[in-house]
Structure formats: C-alpha cells, structure tokens
Image (cartoon, rainbow, N blue to C red):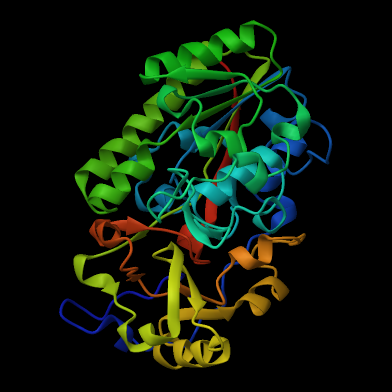
Amino acid sequence: MESVVPLAGAGSDPVAVAAVSPAPCLPDYPRSVAAIVPALLGTTDAAWLAEPARDAAAVVLLVLDGLGWRAFTDAPDSLRHLATFAGGPITTVLPATTSAALTSITTGHPPAAHGVTGYRMLVDDEVLNVLRWQHEAKGVRPPEPSDVQRLTPFLGRSVPVVAQAEHRGSGFTGAHLRGVPFVGWRTTSVLVEQCRRLVSAGNRLVYAYYPGVDEVAHEFGLHDGAYAGELAFVDDLVARLQSVLPADTALVVTADHGQTHLEPEAWVELDDIATLVARQAGDARFRHLYAVRGANRELAAAARDRFGGVAWVRTRKELLAEGWLGAGAAGPVPGRIGDVVLAPFAEIGFVDPALPRERGLRSAHGAPTENEVRVPLLAARGTA
C-alpha cells in the first residue's frame, strides 16, 4: 500500500484525486522518538535500541532534522556510511513536524502530554508560531515558554545541547531545552568538535541537532540534486563525528520527521469551506481548522465531503480518541487542537491565507503517512 497518493498530473484538480482512504501510519509511542531519551538515560527498557547504544559509556544523540527513512530507500548511494549503522526505522510523533517532535525527544513525552501540537498552534486565543515564538497578531506579547510547555527536558538531567548558536535564548529553545547547558555552533566542524569535547569532559549523554536536510528539502524538494548532495554531506558529517568519538561511546542518529515532495500545483485552497473557518494553524499537511461559533459539526461534515478523498479528516475528539498525539491531553492542550484537522494522504498541502509564503515549499510534513512518520534510529560505536 502506498503511503502517499500522488497527484493525477500537472493541471489536474488535486482534490479530484479520489482514493480509498488508507490507514494512517500512527506512531508507536512506546517505541517512538519520544522513548529514546528515557531509554538512553536508563529510566525505561533499552532493549529495543540498537545494540551499540546499549551499555555504552557515553552517547551522542544526533537529531538530523527532516531525514525520514524514505531517504534510505530512495537515495541509498548518498547514505552509504549511515547504512553501515545498526538499527532501522521507528516512528516519530504526530503531527510529524519539528516543534512537536523535538519537544517529544527532549521531554520523553508525546505531544498530547507536552502540549506542543504543531508548528503554529492556538495559545491564549491567538495563533503562536512556535519556531519563531511569535503571536501572529501584531502587538501581542508571546507567552512564557514554561507556561506553554511545562515538562522538564531530559527528565531533569543536565544534558548538554549542541545546537545552532542563533537559537540560544529563543522562545522555542526555552520551551523544549529549558535549563540545560547550551553549546552553540555556527559551522559543522564546530558541532563535531563540541561533541568530542563534551564526551571527553565526562558527559554521559550529549544531544546534538543539525537542520540542513529539512531546510534543503523545503527549498528544493526531494528530486533535486541539492537534496541528494545534502544527504551525502550529512553522511560525511556522521562519519566525521563517529571518527572523533572513542570506542566506548555510541553515536545514535535519529530524526524528527520525514518528508513528502510537493509540486507547485499541489497546493489546495480551502475556499469551499472558508465561511465555516474562523482561523487556521498547524502545517500544510496537518492543518488545524477552528470553526466559526456554532459551526463545529457543519465544518466537519463539509470538510469530509470536500476533502475526504485526499485527506484524513478528524475532529478534535476523534483525533484524541484514536491516539494520534499520544496519551495525556489535559488542561489547555485539547483546545490547541483544531475543531477539525486535515491531514492529507495525497501529495498536497492545504493553504492558510495567513501564511501565503508556505506555498513556496517544495516539500512538507506533518501527516500520518509512512514517508513522514517513519524515521531512522541508528547507532554505531566511535572509531577514534
């Protein structure tokens, strides 16, 4: 069964690509990216991890943003070194997007529990851009990160983080990496060297983050030489990092989500149901729709009628009952989820008029397709 339904062809109506709705690829939360840190810290069973990660004296956990498992099947020649690592695919979380998944990795909890329910989400009755940590309404002060996401990163352990220097002190950093030592990098050579130094200093777990695969995929799509080149660069980066780590240290590689390629004509307006929608949030492939007052049921019915042939359409209640975001939703978290969520299984993205530049993306993610949800969990020992 195909995990994504392709468009019928250039010039076709994307919504007219009728298909029998496939089963969504829902996360296996006990063996998802949310379970990696608890296993590495020894608070849960680690038997499901690849053998090199078990009983290592130290671990460097490298998160490669946007490197879905699909890359290993579509571009194996670009990932030859990573292909030698032990392990295989696991699932990320839903929505399969950076803000939700990175918070799950660092806190060890699913989005329903930590409350980061998308790239953009409704907080205090305003749409918050989580990565920029800005309300989209001008002049509205953003909330304190600890008020939005209250769980402690790394189960309260002092785990050093090696991430882009410009992210130091940002709101999203405060939400998912609050209170841990932050070591910035501006070049990948520094990323490698800082990981080496932190392991040499006796740290048992080091968390590192690299965004390049996601950035290149969004700009160029998955069928461009720039994307293949970025995969090869990442493969070299992993090899370099492995080469500076001692043999008793494991390098564990995972990702926050995969990707779905989008052609320029793959963007779908919501004009047919727009009168029922007060505002939107989320991503193009996990679109939260908030109904105008009193129109919740009408919006759900209209969305199913118009988009049920290309997308999974779920109400908030259905989404939580089916466990898409995991367990533990309480307090303000359910209200951050749309009254209706559109998650396409076709290769399309839904347009939010409040974010017109989004339709310039050549890849996107968020939906429960195999391409977006399946990510690597690979490990090897250092070779220094």
